[in-house]
Image (cartoon, rainbow over all chains, first blue to last red; front, side):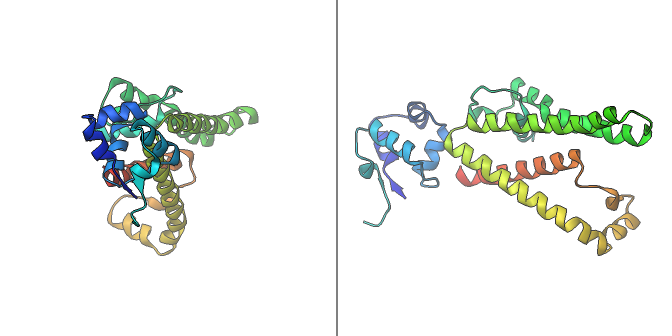
Amino acid sequence: MKNRVRELRTTKAWSQSDLAVRLGVSRQTVNAIETERYDPSLPLAFKVARLFKLNIEQVFSDGSE
Amino acid sequence: MLDTLTSMLYIAFMNDRPNIPEEIQRCTWRSLKAGGGWMFIAMGTSIAADYLLPQHKDWPLVLRALLVLFPIAAALLYVRSTARWVRGMDELHRHITLCAFLVATVAYLLLNMAWPLLDKAGIFEAISQSTNLRLERLYLGNCTLTLAFTYAFWGMGLRVLYRRYQ
């Protein structure tokens, strides 16, 4: 699954640790999501989208388009 | 090496507070103290029972049963502390840890199945002739060995899986 988490995070000038604290996960989890090694659960994906005030489709895509 | 050991020991810690996944990787007093958890109590009491029971066949049945059941009770408490520990993780670490447990369970079952076959094939006899190791005498169903092997396999699985998600 493709995502724009790194791009969105850098626009806010947050470090991975900052984002991890805001999401209530570890920094390693943020890194694994950004590098697309790990697909987050639906609740976490919603949390990410809400944090950036976007729809979930604007942050995550299945890479088919 | 010490960090690997402490991250492995961490799981045995008797607590119910949410853990901080990144703290697992560090060698702290708290993580070292984790070594005194239920798993080690289970292993220690199992070794004691293995040693005492054959030598004291005259002991009352209740006492003998208690000696055998105590390590099992400690192992159950170890499972409970592990479940609490896993529940306190964030989703990636929970995923990694549960995958590592699956690896450990499958590896232990395979070892358990392979052990008598290796014995029948004469592998252990060949080993004992060249070294002094009497592997055929090892009983894998023993509480201490079960915990030790699954723990070792779990640690190996964890190291591999952590590397995969780094």
